[in-house]
Length: 195
Image 1 (tube, rainbow, N blue to C red):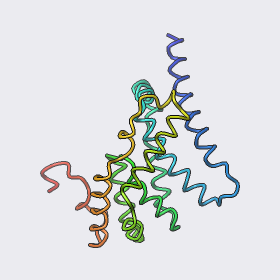
Image 2 (image 1 turned 90 degrees about the vertical axis):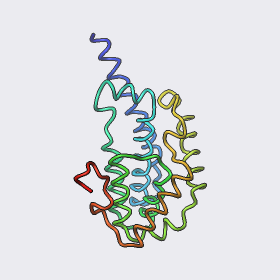
Image 3 (image 1 turned 30 degrees about the horizontal axis):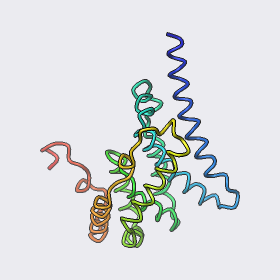
């Protein structure tokens, strides 16, 4: 029994160390400003949260312990990107359309984009094919660097399709042009009484 618990803990520790080392190597560049490092770290935290949840090893660990499957990192990273007012943070926020995000994170994403009115400029310029290609490259590089952690992770489990990117981009642009916010008209309806 003690040996099984030790293995479980070791797998969680391995996942955490891999993610932290990858994030640390990404942000060790002294030449970048603090703002740029924070923005990159937030973008990477969202990616690694999605990658870990798509990984068979990550899913196994999640079934064993709640610590391994928390979406807190992605939610905090998304909030950080939205809270920053720099053009770069807003651009990175808009570029998150490349990821397959759902549930509460997708709702938060929509709310944050609608709250950041300058998002229109960035959303208008986005190329779905370039976003998809960028995401595919990210996933392939991550799998090459972390084969044990990301073994069996499909690109489509992290990256969204070009059609879905365009659909969401247009949906956001229309909502922004109409001045919509995160009021009940944009939140998912849970029952007939909400309608």
